[in-house]
Every structure is written in C-alpha cells, then in structure tokens.
Length: 178
Image (cartoon, rainbow, N blue to C red; front, side, top):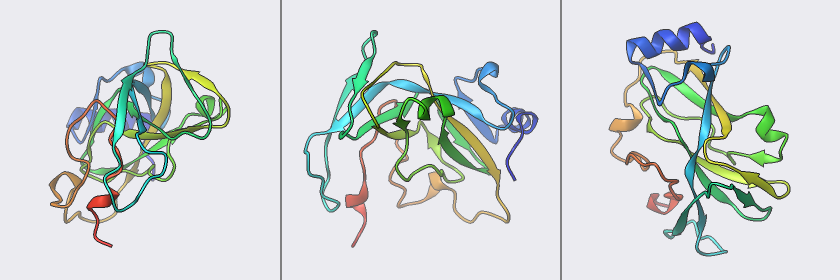
C-alpha cells in the first residue's frame, strides 16, 4: 500500500517521516517531490573496480547550470534530507525528468526503514542536458511495511551510508567481503 498525501502529512506530524526542508507545494497525491542539491560528483578513474575504493571529485553546479553528457556516470544529491521510521521510501524519477532523458538511479530506488540522510542519485543521460540546483529531480513514494522490524538501517553495524551529508557519496561496495 502506498501512502496518500493526507497520510504522508499525518506521518510527518507524528515524526515517522521527516523531510527537510519541507514545502507543502511539493506534496503530490501520493508522493513528495525532491530537488537536485548543489553538488555533483564524478569518479576520478574511468575504469571502476568493485573491490577498491573508487574516489570521486565533487563540484558545485554553477548558477547557469551544468551540462551532463552521455557516457559519464554523475552522482548527484537531493536537496532534501529525509528520515523514514515506519515506511519503505522509494525514490523514482519524475516524468518531466525522464522526458529530458535523465535517469536518476541505476538500481538503488528503494530505501530502508530507518534511512536518515540525503539521497545520492546515480545520474545518466541519453543526450546532453543542462541541469540546475533546486530543479525537481524525483519523487519519494512511501510503502507500508508488514510486520515488525528487527533492525532499522540507521542502527545496522554494517550500514555504509549513515554519515549525514549534503554531497553525493561514492559506492562503498569495497567494504563488502566477496
């Protein structure tokens, strides 16, 4: 079951969903619009290695925007910091974003109950497109969880993305054992 606008507002009032900054006009019928933060990042190396720490370079999107190009993976970040304590948050692209040829996540659209942070976006584009800080980039949808939760994301000892940030975060795959 997906939460409606009224239910999202109720959960915000109860503190089980936190969105900062929250703007009432960004609340849709059953979702909340999130916006592109001011930082992007790209990997320093062209060939990435799943077993090593692949470093990234951060840069700020200039006022006149920044042109994204096909063939490069850009990491972006949501302007909004979110917390979800009773529901599963899903981040999806907006149709207007998709119609510009912008994909905002390769595989990581689902968050975990207890995730408390900004969202790192895995951005790729079909053709060159200029993006701007603060532009609508995606929407959060909240699903009801069936059953009790044993371990919330923020309390997991092996959670790799718990450090609060306003910048995109690189892959932490290298922390896994394989």
